[in-house]
Amino acid sequence: MIKTPPAVWRAATAAIVRAWFFAALVLALPLAGLAAAETPTHGIAMHGDVKYKAGFTHFDYVNPNAPKGGTVRLGVRGTFDSFNGFIIRGSAASLIGLLNDQLTVAASDEAFTRYGLIAESMEVPKDRSWVIFNLRKEARFHDGKPITADDVIFTYKLLIKKGTPFYRFYYSNVAKVEKLGPLKVKFSFKPGENRELPLIMAELTVLPKHYWEKRDFTKPTLDAPVGSGPYRIENFEAGRRIAYVRDKSYWAAKLPVMRGRYNFDRIRIDYYRDTTVLREALKSGRIDYRQENQAKAWATAYEIPAQKEKKLIKLRVPTKSGSGMQAFAINSRKPKFSDPRLRRALGYAFDFTYTNRTLFFGQYSRTKSYFENSELASRGLPEGEELKILERFKGRVPPEVFTKVYDVPSYKNRRELRRGLREAFKLLKAAGWVVKDRKLVNARTGEHMQFEILTGSQEFERILLPFAKTLERLGIRARVRLVDPSQYEARMRKFDYDITTLTFGQSLSPGNEQRSYWGSRAAKIEGSRNWLGVNNKAIDELVELVIAASDRAGLIARTRALDRVLLWHHYVIPQWHIPAQRIVFWDKFGQPGKPTIRGEDLFVWWVDKKKEAALGSALKPN
Image (cartoon, rainbow, N blue to C red; front, side, top):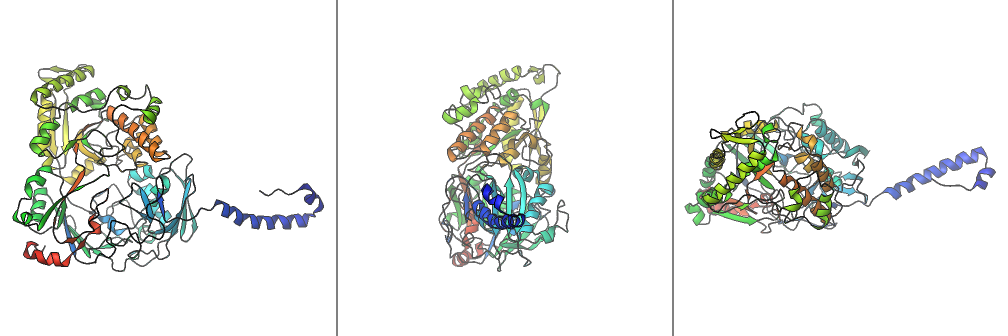
């Protein structure tokens, strides 16, 4: 507001006052706008500065001159019945995300940085209380229609209303979205410190309003949708195969963030009911590439002449992006699993050392953190900033958080296993369970402890059956139940399980997604990622502290505190990890040779026609 000396007011007539007022208002508005404006930027980093400065030509880990062309053939276990991967219902086709662009893209050689794609630039204030996206005028959907602010706003509202519950948690801090122009959108955030919010909105996939506003977004569909990404659907056979074709008129092909990427003219994906058959398809030359996730198969399944002749390549690529947590997940919603002492006792029945030696050829390490293989993992006893954080929660978190280093039962031999089971019996007795007639029963109700271990993987049965056998020694009846992938997915959405194996993937910059994993609200919503049923106010508050971290050091301390509290609640029985990718592929590809912290990215590779020709009859037509 402009202050005018009293003498001016006394000397002015009413007409002059009105004229001055409106003139001052007209002048003040653009000045106020200039004061509030932020310098548009091409990229945003979670903490610190971006690696790639304005005017960069391509990411370091790509070959900007990679040739386009050729076909890559992939295999997937399971089935699909939908091209809508944003909703709970249906099983979406693999790689369906290739059809749609986001406002920005991530750099694979940085922890959490976003660079403009649909958005040419972004404006963010120092307190990150809002973000403005300035869209590229050349951005187009596949049908030629421009991508506008209306599409961005429509997509945001559509996802929070009709998308999976994840979006409601992920975007829950958005207070308002505004259209500032045909190609300008502003997201304003609720009060509170949350540096991640501009980057979260920068991840928004933009859908065409003119296509989806006329359709029921909540239903699975096999109508090929209109997208804006580097690929379109070429053809498909529901549940059996799908082929994507590169859009040769792709609007973003020459942008720095896209140079050297998405080089295959065609991507074909075949679906298999059995992983063993899928591997045979690879070895017979009907599939070109696979990431192997089974230790036994990695060690023994590919010993064929083509591999010895180096036509079929096995490549182990170290990663530094964090392994997250793979574990036996216990559904704490079930009354019989509500006591953490019982959950902890079950962990004594898993003999990782024996499993790793006899089934995994010693390839794995035991997981001991939800943020394994990263600096975010808790270690030792809490100290420094982490201890200060945890002291706020004394009396509300397990006391072991402060006094004991978290570890998992480990056995060198069967004698040590028997000692571990005796420890389990002590915990079970403390939790109100006793053994009668060789059965573990509730001392108060007489209920026999029995449950189902659910799996959607036939290969995993060989791991689960020994675990179930050891549980019998505790008087527990554990039945292994194998279901097909579609049924498994449907049951997990409804939290219809006792114990299963889950992987909690984590980024190097955790934030809002933690609400969906551990938040009390998420525990009550079917389809959320809170499969464990975590419903704890102290954990809710720790999640919010992680989200509000203002710098990297603070994020590390807060994440370690959250990790430690989750571990001591014993919601899971940690399994194993390997800090590497294991990939098997036919030697038909060119590669930049620059793996990132996340490993190799197939979509910066290309088909080398000379190598492909040299393989000759080793590659079979589909």
